[in-house]
Image (cartoon, rainbow, N blue to C red; front, side):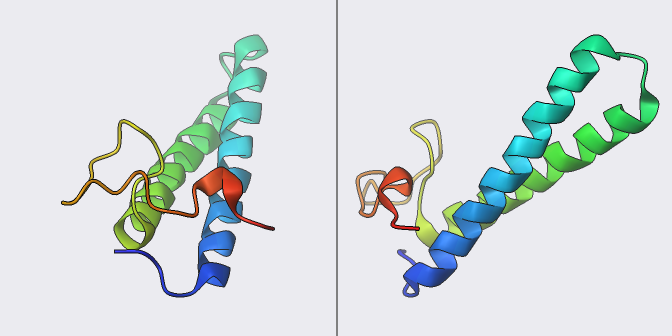
Length: 87
């Protein structure tokens, strides 16, 4: 079921991107500071938030990735694709 308001889709994608950026930055930090408990807790918090945001997006807008579940009919090919959204 595609989202009727493309503006909401863009805002959802931007939030997912921001949270995923934090996940990767914290992972890089943890590579050199593996015993930093606060950084690990924040990383895990951001990972959980990323999963929640992506699940919410996929429920409203359709699959984000090839390995996402799809409703019938197959929806990954619905437009716009996430990388084609005009910001």
